[in-house]
Length: 136
Image 1 (cartoon, helix red, strand yellow):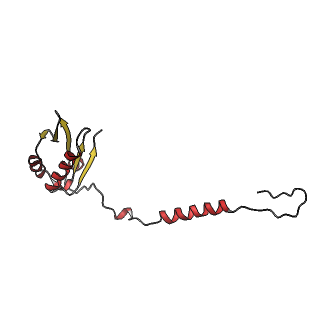
Image 2: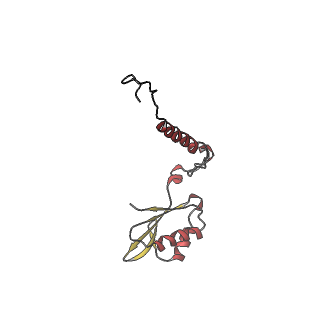
Image 3: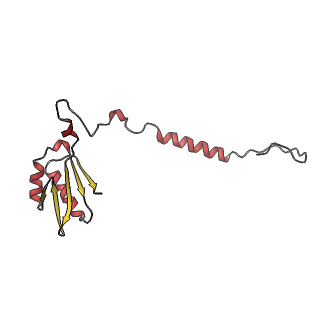
């Protein structure tokens, strides 16, 4: 944009507004999409809850079911015990407290069916919160 006159012509200065319109439209769309369409954070329920009178260490210790391959066969490891059948796994999971939830850690080389079996056994045992996490 040049405001100085060259050669003494009587031409008025021109201002290209296309870039300003683009920037205005981007700002408008940004504010429309980021306004409070979601749920307020104060209304979200936390995953960790500490009740008075309970042991804080027990609240933060997760329950983990590991799915891995040993000698070419899928093995479900719950704590220090290895379980190979679906019925035994469901029985062992029923003995755990269900309100804490369960993490299913799947190691590399495990078939998808074995991971799905672990998740389904947890659901059959009464767990409402089952989270699948990959192993490092």
